[in-house]
Image (cartoon, rainbow over all chains, first blue to last red; front, side, top):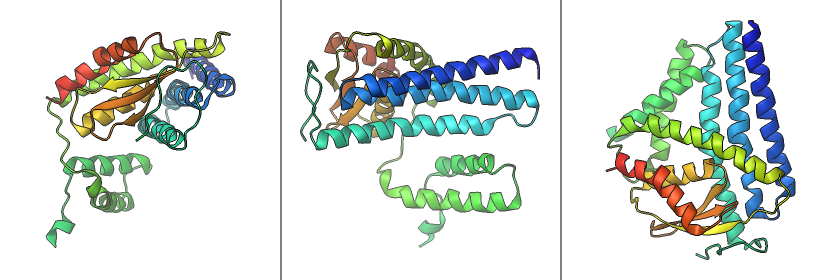
Length: 110
Length: 162
C-alpha cells in the first residue's frame, strides 16, 4: 500500500471517529429529548461516511475489491436514519415529552 | 390472476435485482435466482404503499441535488459539532414549515433531506400535506430556517417534480 493511501485512511478514520465521539458527547450533554435526537443522527451521517470512505480506499489499495458494498451501506444508512429520527420524534410528541425551557414554538397535537 | 406474475414497478425490481447481485459477493446461478425472486416479491408486498406511480419529471437533476446535500451535510456537521462542544446552551425551536410541494414522494425526499442535514430534524407532516414540523437545534429565528430550507432544497425539488 502506498504511503499516501495510508495517510488518507488514517486521517479519515480519525475524522470519522472524532465526529462519532462528538455525537456521543452531544447525546450526554444536550438538554432534552428533541435536541438529543440531533447528536446521534448527525454523527452517523458524517462519522460513518468518513469511515466508509476510508474502507473503500483500503480495499481498493489492497486490490481486493472496488468497495461497492461500502457505498451500499452508506446509501442504506442515509435512507433509514431520517425515518428512524422521524419515528422517534413522532413517538415523543405522541406521549408528550417535555421540551427544554427556552424552546420556541410547540410540538403539534394531532 | 396474471397480475400476480408481473412486475408492477420495473425500476424498483431492477434496482432490487442489481442490489442483490452486488450484495451477494459475485454473480452466480443462485444469486440470480434469488435476485429474481426478490425483485418479484418485494414490489408485490409493498404495492399498497405506493398509491400512485412516482413521477420523476426531471430525474437528471437528482445527482446535482445529492451532491449539494452531501456538501451541506459536511459543512453543517462542523457547526453542530462546535455547538455541542461549546459551553453556551443552544436555542432549540419547533418551526412550522409551509410546504409548496404537493407530490408525496417529493415531500418525503424533502423531509429526509431536512433530517439528514445537521441541525434540523423533520418531526411530522400535517394530515393535509400542507406543512412540516421541523425541530431546529439552534435557530435564531423561524424565518431564517424556513428561508434556508426553501432556497437550498425545496426550490430544486420543485423544479424536478414539475
